Length: 214
Ligand SMILES: O=C(NCCCCc1cc2cnccc2s1)c1cc(-c2ccc(F)cc2)cc(O)c1O
Ligand SMILES: [Mg+2]
Image (cartoon, rainbow, N blue to C red):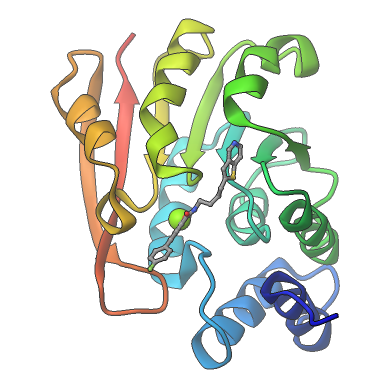
């Protein structure tokens, strides 16, 4: 049967990147998506904004909603000091299978815990599954209509603390209007928009960074 796009992306990593070198994995995926097939990774332009926020926060606990092929997982995990853990949730088993191999190729499997399932089911289990009290950093990049219900769930499960940072992808394209309206008007968040472009295109998109004020 025909291969899937994530499988072709993985093959590009295996053929072009250097095992154990996260930057070469990132570059191989960006090259594949620019020159062969577009894919919904956060990409290099928004990716460098993601990098700067992760470096500023220096999280000890981090959560990613939406793994896909593991591109942003590798971007985040490569910046985390030893002893920190990035938990990443993926709904689609085929995407998760590819992401595990991409993360392993980058040599970051010891810093990442990939969990398959729906965010609405898994978020309430974070404490019992991982003993996580609160997340310092959350990268939101999953179903666009789940951004708002899931941050409310994070609040309810007391998984956010004063100063927790949320960084949301695609707030313009495909767009997350209810989420934006909430974080920009809620007294519990201080929000800032980083204007950029949809990965590998000239279409406007951006990241919204929101600090939970408690
Ligand atoms: O849909 C996007 N990402 C979400 C897919 C992940 C589904 C999951 C649900 C779920 C639930 N629980 C736990 C884990 C998970 S993972 C997405 C789409 C575009 C795009 C596509 C076409 C287009 F023309 C323009 C932009 C660009 C992007 O950067 C994206 O991120
Ligand atoms: Mg995205």
